[in-house]
Length: 429
Image 1: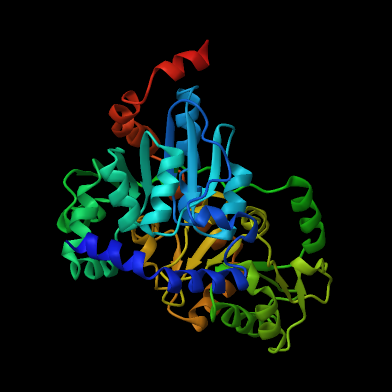
Image 2: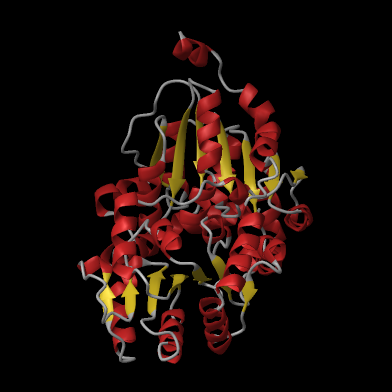
């Protein structure tokens, strides 16, 4: 009953939805050149043969399953994979990293007409949903068409669970549409089961199977030459409020660590101008990467307001603070800097990555606030042995893939074996 009410409301509210999307487009949150995709109008033809549709909400989710995509395509030569996400930044990054026979489209906004248009065109043979973004019309219409659906790398925070528990008439029909839910942890599995998922297993977190973030070797060499012999640290994937904290940490530590360079990479590069003004207001000498400004001896803070370059800066910095964690955002992925040899610091608000935080306990450093961050950065910069020990401990945790990818593929095997075989055989011929 409630899914039908939701469907009716999203149908009747189309003028408001159009207005909302127009405002998003005006501020750069929608892609004008591909806006039709958000209305279910495909910009590519459906390839022949079996097609897996894989939906990931945004950048983090999409990057976490690149290894899975690679294995699926390697093992099934006739297969194509459609990857959908909903954000402009994720579209750009994912498109650059997808292998041949995988391609990106924007997910349609969850209005029944647009969802049906999307499914009419793509006709997926299997749908894989990543983590926890569940759109009622998209799930329900896929279920009605008999598309097998599996949730992979499922994550459900305590806060999200509490929210869904207030809507049992909506969440139970949604989860009943999934033939299988594969979760990151046993706690996630318990939460999905409590919300109504019928078949739940926990093979582990695919983020452990993700390859290290890439970096351009020549640019890394160039930046290393610019920063040679300078103590430096990185505030990565920062959210509003955290850049100011990073600037304050720099001002406190600069007198103690001669030549200190602070690197700041905002989670959303579009905030670059705003962040530069805020940091400049603290009296800092700021160089902005998107403006082509070089790091000079006078530069105190380098603002890397570009997309897809975190791998570059993780390799440059031995000390990394992972943002989204001093503010109530839920954190970002600690494994990414740990894989690349950094000592890792984070704040207390890491609910979205709680399993990783638990496994990193004793390897990463948790701080409560800006003062704690300054103390941690100060100690790591001033004690090379301690810094090396923390980096090695974090790297050891990040290396524990534990066969997660193989375990996930084993659970997916029955669904993969049910895909059409005629086209696969023809592709091999």
